[in-house]
Length: 151
Ligand SMILES: [Zn+2]
Image (cartoon, rainbow, N blue to C red; front, side, top):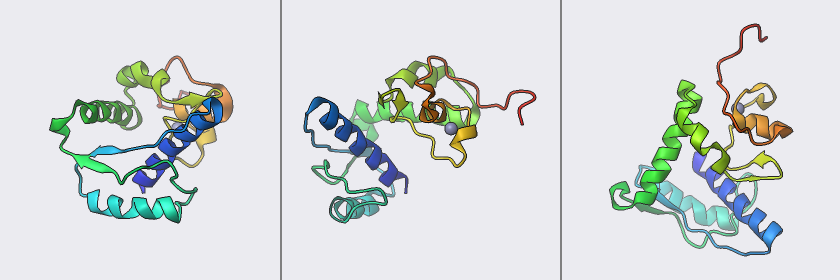
């Protein structure tokens, strides 16, 4: 489930802040209203206690709160980021993600805030997979089209 992975990423971000800066933070997730609202609100308490496929969500102070995106600009900003990421991966458009790429959370040269969940990340040309291979955070976002002559 995409929500589980997203919350794990956020939990990991808070864990890195704790480990590197000694700061403890608690998380509240605010999301746009969707058909997943009831399901996610039932699952998060379970993920906090029993854990997800990759560990427990320790830092979540509350179940996710769902709001009308017209009521808060923060949700509209999140929608813009999601749109830029979608255009990069689904339409191979780099323009908007280029502006955002260095803003995704990273530590030790590995981009944790943008992750491409794909098998064979070792062969993927995207910035997230390149970072995962230890190539650092790219200053220029590459095209995802295979280059001529590539296997
Ligand atoms: Zn990738």
